[in-house]
Image 1 (cartoon, rainbow over the protein chains, first blue to last red):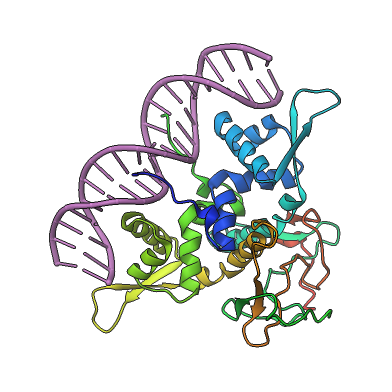
Image 2: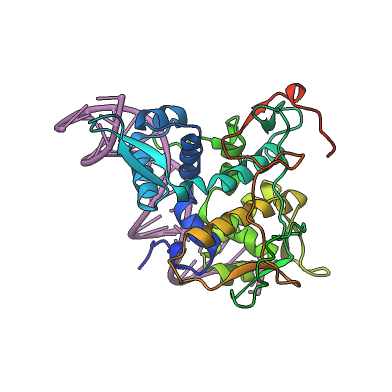
Length: 157
Length: 157
DNA sequence: CCGTATCCATTCCGATACTG
DNA sequence: CAGTATCGGAATGGATACGG
């Protein structure tokens, strides 16, 4: 067997499994648009400027993965609206982490006059950060995984 | 021109720019290993099981993007050690968001007896969540971007 | 307007051989 | 052991034609 892609989805690692579903260029951008309220095939296609066939393929994959779900676009319409499922909604944090990192690290000095703020108060967002359930901030190397039995019972903070 | 890939890196969107650098299968997994302390070409190759040529290409790309940096593996060695830069370190949150999402949404019921905990106390990690600088929790649709001048000055909480 | 199918170029990936 | 070079197969992506 030659050019066969490894199946990341079978590995025992959350990151690998996540990447097997959303680890390509377009999927996350489609999901971003879905969060913005886009629903229709043509809207995705126009906003993202990607080819129709691969949009079609990506949408199918995301539906199969349970991230998007289709419903009739309007009463009795044969066309589909693509909306986020619960599982898809939970990707919001992933999207935002990427967003913050991109805005802060992928633009040259002064190229970007823009801040992410809460819609009404215009208060800037906090940078996402790790903490324990009780709210103690920790670094990226201060955690491991243990079996559920070994974990400290929820402190119910 | 036919099969020319669109350059996401030029779009005026943090997510798109971020994806143009780390939006492929292997890059984030390489970075994950880098966080775990892997440094050597062979270690990455063995852990990830990817072909040497594409590992080579990915490492080069990540170095170019300023996410990894090379240094001599040991005194006077001709070989490289690959370590995270500051920019790379800041990817930790992205990695963790993906990790949490994957662990919670990409395993079947009971397949996973594992929790992410703080190393010493064994206290479970909190799920990443959005909030404003002053600590108010908000949802994924409660923010926008505004020019820096329009944002509320930091409340210094 | 929605979505599929087809054609083709490019890129990605795995295997392997090779150099230092 | 580190890294490059080459090959072939697979998947990705763009353009476009086509049917519903």
